Amino acid sequence: MQIFYLSNRPTVLAGTIDAVTRWMPWVTSAVVVAPPKMLFTSSDRLPVTVIDEAELSGHSSAELKAMDHVTRNVTLRRAALPHLDDSFILSDDDYRPLTHVGLDNFVDDRGRHKRYWFYKLEDWPDRRTDYDKAQIRTLSALRLLGSPTRAYGAHMPQIMNRAMLTEVFKQSDEVGAGALIDEWSLYFNLAPLNHPLAFADPEPFQTLAWPEWPHQWPHQVAPHPIRFENHYPAHEAPGGLFHSLPAVTEPDGPLARIEAWRTAELAIGELRFDPAWNDPWTQGKPVKRGIFSALRLVSKVGKYIGLGR
Image 1 (cartoon, rainbow, N blue to C red):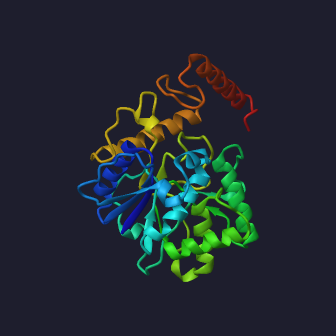
Image 2: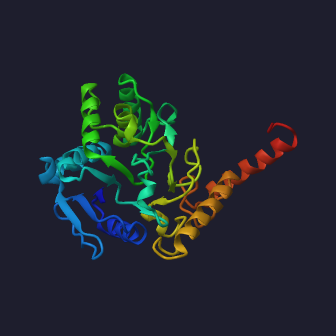
Image 3: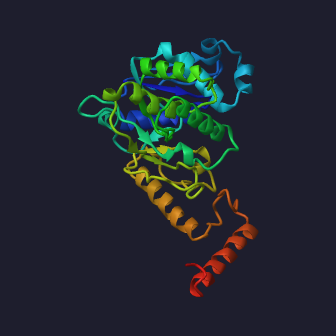
């Protein structure tokens, strides 16, 4: 089975491939689309083919850099389709397995491809970033095409069929969606509509650290079981949730991460922020932590006098 990445971060990619070779040994090769000068040493356990993104897409490096990240990713993934196997695992360079993950996590006993969702597109709560805009456009395209509207950009590897992905991109083009679109949600909503016998029913996603910090937005469905980490290098650095924890390839690394995440989830739910965290709310600053301490006190008083009902 082939796995496919876009990457401009050789260190992050190397760590992810180490995790894949550790926990998904049935993956037999990797295709990586990368900038022309990116240096990457192929794993001795997994053959890696690196394709120059400029040559592949027909766009210069400057043109690709000027695109928003969603448009660039979709442009490069579409261009790479002729280089991929009939079925392949689509991933990002930071989607890391945390435990043994078999091919049966992607294909059921009837040969149907599995698919993992995390949200309903019509409920996606924001519109500020390019990612947000892609969710809105994807929802709009799927509504025009009469499709279900689950969000499948679950920040974990998922299996895709090359011909079916080509087909849904053409359907998207017919309604003028362009490249600012969520290809994961486009594929896993439309392809089962076109080929209902080829897909199993949707399942909840299996991703730790999506979103980056607990409570950045509310989960609509809990990730269970947890099989993958959406890796953020900042979480490994001082101030990150996983700073000083063992690597995901070490025996106690995955459990330590899940424990750290749950501990932070409970603490942040109570408006308690560790002074060492570089979280998005307080950034480790005492004044901001003090504001949340006051809010926590007001919340307790409100409950005591009945205002919290």
